[in-house]
Length: 442
Image (cartoon, rainbow, N blue to C red):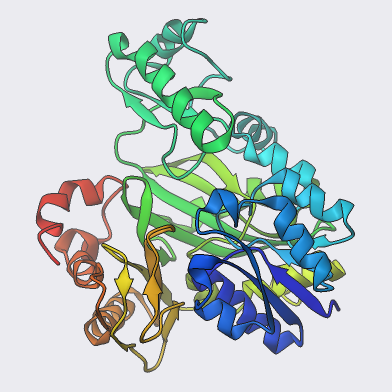
């Protein structure tokens, strides 16, 4: 067992990792920008190191500073958390070169699965269906002919991307070339790689993902699926497990391709394989080679501590969970609590009671910085079934009080009580369909 670990991240995910490490007897080293010097993760860690000024490009994204902080404090491993460098193969490689264990898959696996075109090809080898699409493409170069063969509308995606960056929906052939140029420019700016490809656009599919844990030696556990269809501008708002749109037959079919894929790659740690679901068909979309923001819903239904399993897999080549004995129970829902603007939290009253979890870095008197993501907290509930979980989430959101900083908590309560959401019949355009009404709720 390692004795000390550096967390190359901030905010609620850093606090989350610190909690598990403390239970495991592992000392933690936090890193922080000058804007985060009073952040909760800095206060909770055993040690903390300042790595630069507020902009991420000068602090949380500077690989060398993070490695030096780990070495200087005697760390044996680095947990990348989510976002920032969590799916950066060169960061994982640099950690290894300096004798540090990277809590995640190998750099080679990160590179393979981080390239969406290569990931599609790999998924197909293991029998997973993919949305009809192209290989890497540029403006000109046969793009129009390829799009016409697929049939409009099409979607342009960044090969190295995510989070909606470098993504454009095109409905008319005359708009294709310009949108390829725009998407490529966005991709280059956000991912240092301007490569894009084209897929047939599915009008209103569900977004469903399987939570994977693997020990690096071919053993793969699946902790059920999550439905992440409630999204605004490709950013998830509400997640639940299981998905109301997936039946047992589809669940088995997804797993039948996912397990051999991750096993063959000797994948290590936590990962997510994402699908688009349209009716009774599903299509491979991508793999995220890290823990996901919404991992707590999978923890609730499975009883696993995903962070603990990650650390054990990557440092000891084993998991505590038995892949053949995973038992899923009940229904879990997560609402992301986003701040509408930065500011100081003057009052905080968090919900509690059975089956309620509040993951956050907030405390009374803390300041939300304008430099980072707007997500301030995650509210997660667990119930015996979907109606019970929804009733519990409604109650928990009603109890949540955050003053000094405006948040979307009331809007989230409105969303989960909307008849369409309650019906369980919706796709990833659901928020766009209710947006005009929803955004009047503050």
